[in-house]
Image 1 (spheres, helix red, strand yellow):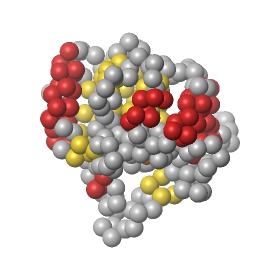
Image 2 (image 1 turned 120 degrees about the horizontal axis):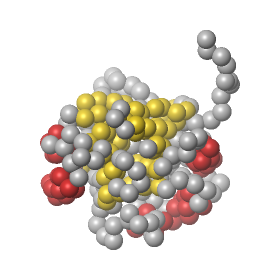
Image 3 (image 1 turned 45 degrees about the vertical axis):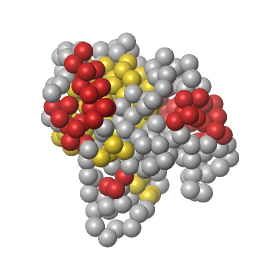
Image 4 (image 1 turned 30 degrees about the horizontal axis):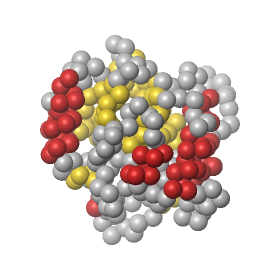
Length: 265
Ligand SMILES: [Fe+2]
């Protein structure tokens, strides 16, 4: 099973640049085209939040037009830049969309790997929270299929990145999530967006990994007094490859065309 993981496209209304400098829509369209061209084609695309930048209807309209070109089934969760009502409207008709409340759901019929979507966002706020109710829900969902390899996806990471201007906007009460994950060793990955960078760490006994943005990268600065910044680094996605009996391998895939192929031996 092959799973493409895109994050934080921050789509803007048609013709508007992200932060006035980056054509986030064009970059997301390029990412979609690259997913469609992958061979073998992925079984699933995961989109871990911040689908649009300001939660606006005209942004979701642009997003929907772009996603119409995606030839792979999509699972999405909102981020802090999304707006839940508009998000629901954009994905109305998707079988995974819950009727009300947080966008929490499970999809297990797209291949060997089961995906649990966990909405830790708090409408109107930039940080998230792992609530006690979400922990109880997740524990029950994971207990239902203990033998299935499982991915848990969420927007804000439940750990301190060490980047001082990101950490106030983490997913709080991450210890609740870690305790649940630790009880369910079939969880192969916890996947996050939000930080616009690739990071990995051990979490609840499994591997947690964050996705790059298709638009910009949050500046990697680890000094306590560092000022918030981002850069136009090469956009990228992750590709998670499940091989029976071998496990889940996660690849970083830059988006774009690059010189080559050349012989390497
Ligand atoms: Fe973002």
